[in-house]
Image 1 (cartoon, helix red, strand yellow):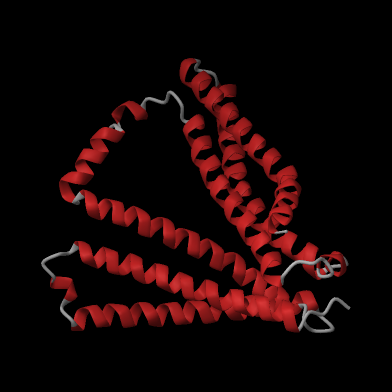
Image 2: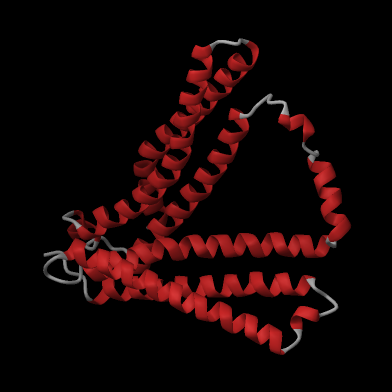
Length: 267
């Protein structure tokens, strides 16, 4: 059943996300074209048009990220907290599957948006002179390996991906938990959802700050900053970020799960 939920969710969100990517790439291509025209023809109108297309491209880049986040959160709200919830929660589907159908789709579109933005930036700057002055990927890789052993580079890459995935899941679950809790009350549901989101965010920042301070103090007390293997410090920090992100995701997942399971209020 989860596969059917995912298929339906991808189809529904794709109707919005694919046009967003199309606009993103069109704005990147238009900006690239005006850049080349303005470089080759000394016309005031082209300079103005280049500025306008640069602004439009910047807006579409930011907008792509905002639309992705807003759409994924809205889909959770619309499917589970409005009249559609009466149908969704009568389906022979576990609550966990309902949550994961939103989470997995949100994660895929988040990665896709990040990749689309990178590709759009490359397209927008295609053929620009500054690329010739930059080192090649091979040169960057050789330089990196000169300072950092290959095993550590691989470890950093894996740790970064894990931390990024967990952080993304935690960010969406923060919204889901706030929406679920806010809609467990009879009145002022949206207002309470906002209140819960703000409260969760403040608590998260507070706990994160104390955790960071505690970790730094612990490292200092154990003379870790003067360790003969400084690469371990980076692994320690990345590992700490990943563990913290995992704990955040688990906490907000449990809040979302038990609220939908025990305190669902669609009245």
